[in-house]
Length: 298
Image (cartoon, rainbow, N blue to C red):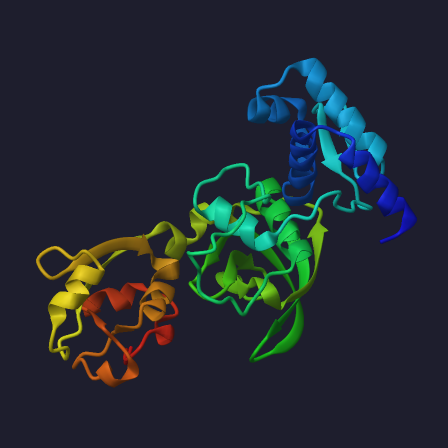
């Protein structure tokens, strides 16, 4: 840690815990949304105008290169030289946002000594996640380098609108200007992002993403090859031997893959570890990326 960073840490330590939380929120908003207003801080912490003014002044003193005030909108915007004052864990932020914690604060809590989550092998890059979220929040297009398993490293322009966890890793749903369609991109495969100036075209926005807007009904049942289907009915709280869920068509294949749902016509995938089967196979005709599912011949 540099001497300058050490001095900043010492200055932060002199502040109250409550003010540190407010400064962390300013830092987070600039990093992940690209901007913040005094009203955002007041609504989040129920502080007054004078207190919020002091918080912004303190933040500016600590990291003067991080933000600038845009007088026309009375909002503080992230500067190109921004360096986060606090460490924001992208995995915690993504999980918090996806579960409905609107502010996305990443401070988290001490993990339990008696309750454990599954081991995670893929960890998103904080700068990439922040860049994607700023583009989504501000409705911007991005120029990026993306490494795929088929094409390798390519440059393309995308217009992201949502980030989603497929059960194993985080994807961003975006319009791909190279292929002129909406696609999924794995967040960990971006090597760099750069915001593009200019408007986003109407057909590149999420309302025109048909697979994202369409909800499909999946009817899941215990795999017909199991000797004790009752156990599976209990696992998934099934009613009359079925579990009906509605998901976006764009992520349906991921859901079926994650839960190892047999999508074959003859229930032939029991040996692949499938404990569930898809009862309404015709729904697969409405789903993209159906090749990700187990057993489907479509």
